[in-house]
Amino acid sequence: MKNTRRSALKATGAFATLVSLGLITQSQAQAAVDRASFAVKTLDDALKAIGGNAATSDQVTVVSPDIAENGAVVPVGVVSKLPNTTELYIIIEKNPTPLAAVFMIPAGTLPDVQTRVKMGQSTNVVAVVKADGKLFSATKETKVTLGGCGG
Amino acid sequence: MNKSLVQKQVLAAAALLVCMGAAQAQDATAEGIAKYREMLQDGNPAELFEMKGEELWTQKRGPKNATLEKCDFGKGPGVIKGAFVELPRYFADTGRVQDLETRLITCMETLQGFKSEDLYKAADNYGKGESANMVALTTYVATASKGMDFALPQTNEKEKTMYEVGKRLFFARGGPHDFACATCHGVDGQRIRLQDLPNLTQNPGDGVGFAAWPAYRVSNAQLWTMQKRLNDCYRQQRFPEPKFGSEATIALAVYMGVNSKGSESIVPSIKR
Amino acid sequence: MADPMRIRAALAGDETTVRVLMAHIMETGIRKDASGALIPAHFIQDVEATHNGKSVLKAMWSGAVSQNPFLSFKFRGAAKGDKVVVKWVDNKGNSRTDEATIA
Image (cartoon, rainbow over all chains, first blue to last red; front, side, top):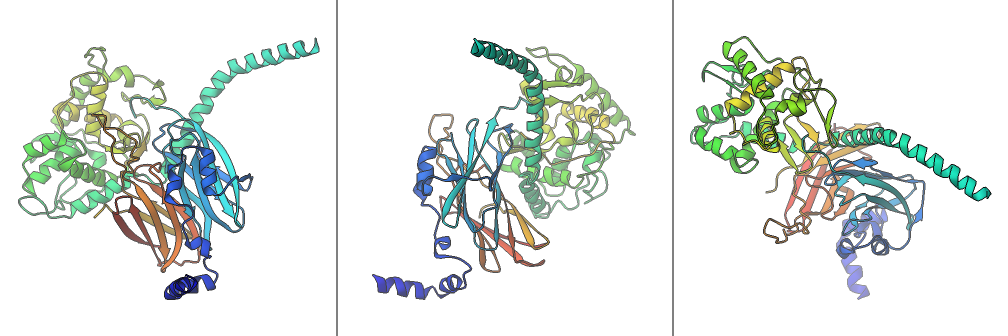
């Protein structure tokens, strides 16, 4: 088994080069979570899937509006000031499946991403980041309201 | 004893805050919504429709296997910059006042050989099939005037008549609710839930009202053109819905467009 | 082939900001149609952006990402005129790759 693994790694020469150059780490090359994590139904289960409890950190920011006119499209971003941030997670606490998106950040890319997510109701947007292998988080409540008939 | 006094004071303060809070909360809400809308501006999915329209503009299509590049929207064949902010206008070749969407159908017929009856029929199935193509093309042509000011011509008799017809229609009450366009859009400062209702009897300002459509609506991920917007207004008033491209819709567009003279088009905009 | 993305990449200082708009329905799989039947899930699951062949971002998405997704990210080490390539793959195996030049 060891042999096949070594030969497999050797076969992917480029990959090994990147690792040896320190451009990516082994863990960065792998997916951050497996697909099944996206099916979990609670914030706690999502955190477990990511790797456990995350310490709150003021170095992590959730960029989201206080109030969203329509839950179908809510701008959400995560920014981390922690060095060696390799993963960013967006969790929408009261969504049927809270884990919404995962971003893997290689060296050279800033831990600062924005996207738009669906929010079923007013709830907390929880950002979790992995930095130096440890988990940190920040939370912000975004209210979701319903717009009017027109517009 | 101390405790209950403190409790009373806290309750009194809380009650005061609630009263003040209601008014402030409304401001905070309005501010919050404004922030939300601002965050959406960066990256408007309407651009995807514009891209599709650009592709269709130069694509050989229809029985004549021709592109739309010679389409005249009032500023000469193929000139799209500035065309949107002068529509609807009178066209000599068709002898009528047309808006962007009906003029597009004219071009698709004369240049590409499509049958206009088929296109009008397709337009009823909004956003699907050939209607999707027309919506994309409408977005593309309208976007070419982004940032320009509205300057609808009122030189031709028919243009002037359409303005007056539009005005009459705007104030005509009917339907089971006895609504008119003016019921919602006839005075300043009205609102439905969180949507501010612009006063369309006058110039509502840059990027508002007539100057905001076509727009991408996040609530249904659709790109709504002015024809669709007017159709849905009538539906919301529980009126029978106007036919696509009907004289009534064009007249209303002339009325609103002329009133918007000088205001800036922000099309395509993004809405809830 | 799926509809094209709109990608804009702009260099400011040493940071390139990439903004992407993807055309995709992002159906969650929990919505029901008029007859009450579940509309099957159809959404982008994987996104990857590369610059000069090097991966600058990878993402795993759920159906909770909004329809016609928007994505914005920043990276260092690029120059004007370089190409940024973005690829997405959805849960049905469809994919789309587009590129943009850094302005």
